[in-house]
Length: 202
Image 1 (tube, rainbow, N blue to C red):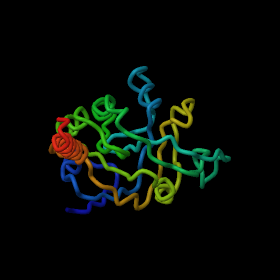
Image 2 (cartoon, rainbow, N blue to C red):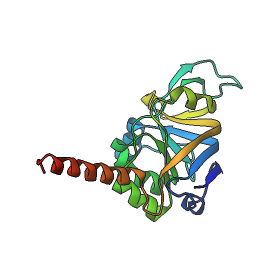
Image 3 (cartoon, rainbow, N blue to C red):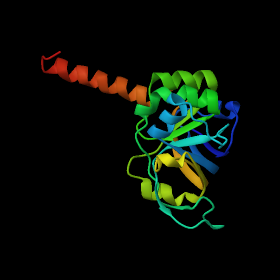
């Protein structure tokens, strides 16, 4: 297993160096995105002025404080609690997010499915997993909310965070077809079948 320190943005070749079981620390920039953001961007064809090319996105709708714009709060927001939401329901947006916006890494909770795995394999990407309930720790890795777009969707706006030492995060899916989540599902199914067979309920 290897630990990678990635200063964003990265290339597809850099994304392809990540393997399931590796750990990653992200530096510099991270974008926050969630269901409503993705629905508006792709189902309603709204465009963002923010440049996601080569970047990582995190599935989140952050709890923030509205404050006057200042050098310390250039977007008029400060982070309060920025947690991660479950990723699976955003499965259908992985490919368009990578194709149209150039995203390379998705950070989330609970994993994603075969459509995402196929997109990573074809386009060069990875899924980095965060353990549920770690919002307080995650928030300490975010230094500033640098910018925000599509803010009529608040809190499911498109956020640009300045980050420092964001991680370590676990590579849960890679561009080589590896998926800890698919492996776990197979193991659980196998154990379930064995249990049912042992009690005569197979």
